[in-house]
Length: 303
Image (cartoon, rainbow, N blue to C red; front, side, top):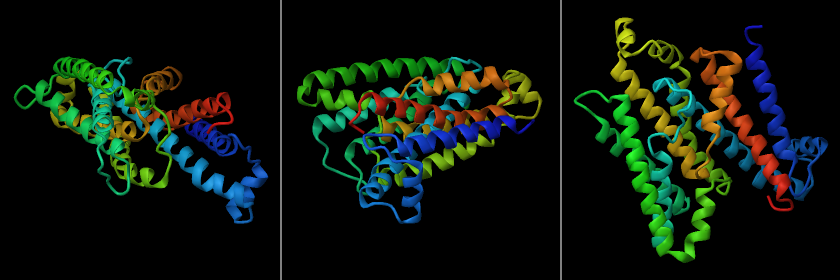
C-alpha cells in the first residue's frame, strides 16, 4: 500500500506516453508502434514516430515534470501552496529574452539550436541573478524580499516585452506564439541541450524532501533541528530556478502545471515532501502530456 501511489502514477504516465505516440493527424495503432520499435514498421510510421511524435512526447513530459517539481519546491520554500515556478520572475525574464532575440533577429546559434531558446535561457538565468541580488540582505535572502523583488522585476520585464512587441510589429505573431507556450522545439537537439540542466536540477530536488519537511516548521525551528537554513534555501532556489529556466527556454511560458499539480498531489497524498516531490514530477509530466494530446485532437490535422 505504501508504494501504491508511485505505481499508479507510473501507470498513468505510461498510458499518457503511449497515447501521445499514437494520437495525431495520423493515428498509429499499438500494433504499428510495436512494429516500428522492432524496425519492421512502414517508412511513414517510422518517420512520424522517431522524428515528430517521440521527441515531442519526451519534450512535453520533461517540461511538465520540471515545472511541477519546481512548483512543489517553491511551495515548500515559501510555505505557500499557491506559489508557482514563475513567482520570482523567471517566465517574464525568459519571455523578454526571447522577444529581444526575435526583435533584433539574433543570428547566433548554440549546438545547432535557434537563437530564441538560447536567449530565453540566458535571460531567465540573468533574471534569477538580479532578483537574488535585489533580495539579499547580508548573507541571507529573506522570503518576503525575494517575492517582492521577483514581482517588481517581473512587472518591469513584462512592460519591456510589451514595448518591444509594439515596436516590432512583424514579429508580434511569432512572439505571442512563444509566450503562450508549446512544443515547437520538438527535436532531439533541443532535448539533449536541456537534459543536463533538468537532470541536475530535478536530481537535487528529489533528494530535498527531508529538508523541505523541516522548513515547514519555520526557519528558527529548522535551524534548531540542525538544518543550515540559508545554504539549503540557496541550493533549492538555484536548483528549481535552473530547472524552470531550462523548461521555459525550450517550451515557452506554460502556466498552471507548476501550480495545480503539486497542490492536487498534496491534497490527495498528504504534505510529506519525500512523497510529494517525486509524485509531483511524475504527475506534472502526465498532466502536460494529456493537455498536449487534447490540444492535438482539437487542432487536427495539425500536430
